[in-house]
Image (cartoon, rainbow, N blue to C red; front, side):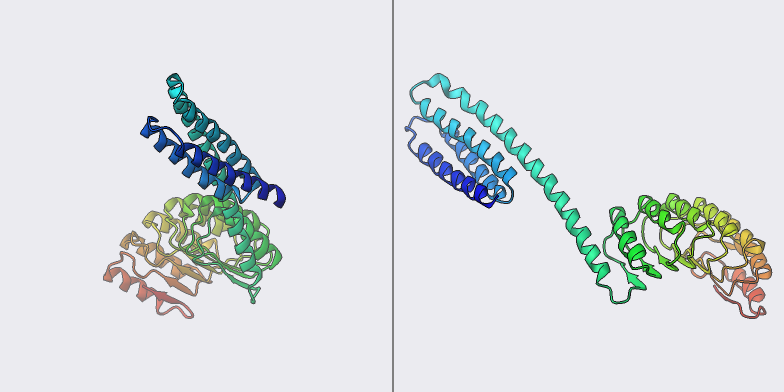
Length: 336
């Protein structure tokens, strides 16, 4: 393969020199515009030659381009003897430009594929080099949905980590679907952080389906800052009815309203007695209309130990009513 590449590269260099000499020897009456076009073709071919040194396929395309350039140079020379041939170089120039564009797009697509493979390889290497196999932190690594298969294969299946952080990335509902498949019957992962992604309501629906399965061993999940609305609250409420393992649920900085909060608190009143920590911090659409629902939840739930509802839209009066109920309850802490 190396010998072929060297030979083609040499032929490219020699042909370029020939075309240069041919254009320099054109008679003075040759159109200056055509000379400029020819020079632009040579410069373009030089780029193709440089790219062509990477792969034999690209060298072949460069060779075809040079053959066209040679024919163009010959026609430029013949136009000095037969003016009627002057239009032909323009046709060849258009064909050559099309060939250059086709070669460029093929090469760009190949380069994109190689870049993705390289990024996956680097992610795989990073995971395998973690000294603490039980705790793998992949936060702020610009991960996308396409990276989730690598994360599952090497972090969850191979390393069997118990804590996985995927915070502050670009994971959407598509990535959530990939994750939900492994969470369905996962027996090793206990803590999962998906804070600051773009899961949305659909992504949460898929994850909640897996959390509803009794085989899912997850005990803590952080879904903060994922643009969640009351539709997600409905999925979470349905999940909490069935899940008996989840101990910590973090839903901070989302878009839940009083209606969505009522769905969640109603389930926690009497249908879930395992959740210990609930965070609703920075859900600024939660108002005093949710105070009564929170009070009933605090009174009846026996498992909750800590509830965060700070930085919401609660009035001082509403906060006082909540604290009045929360303070006497032994082993319970309310942060509002």
